[in-house]
Image (cartoon, rainbow, N blue to C red; front, side):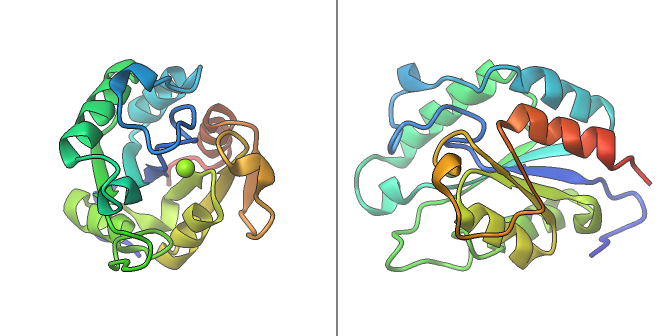
Length: 181
Ligand SMILES: [Mg+2]
C-alpha cells in the first residue's frame, strides 16, 4: 500500500528481545539493555530516509503485572540508549485472552503508524523475535525478518523472509539490500 508520493519506508521494530535484551515483562528502567550496535544501524537508517517505529505488545499491563507509567519509564530509557533514533512507538496493552485489532499478530499498530506517519508499506519491513511479530508483518503486507535474540532462537512456527542473529544484521540487510526507489 502506498499512502502518498512523499511517503517513507519504515522499519517496524518489536521492542523486547529485538531492540533490547529480553527481560520477562520488563517494568524497571534499570533492566534495560539496548542490543549492542543497534544505534549505529538506526542512525544509518534515519540518514537514508527510513522511519523507525516500535510496535510492542505489553500484555503485562492487561495482566496487571505493571502499569502504563512503568511501561513508559522503560520505554524512555530504551529510547535514551538508542540516542532518540525512534520516530514513534505503538503499544498494545491487551490481555492475550481479549486481544484488540492492535495486538500483534493483528496488523493494527502497523496500519495505524502507516496512516499517521505517511509510511509506504510496500517498502517497509517488520523485525521481531517471535512468530507473532512475523505474522503481524505479513498481515500488514510488509516483509519480515526474524532475529535470534530474545525468543527468536527457539522459533520454528513461522516463515520470515529472512532469519538473522540480531537487529543489527537485520537493518544492514534491509539498508544494503533494498535501496530507496
Ligand atoms: Mg519480542
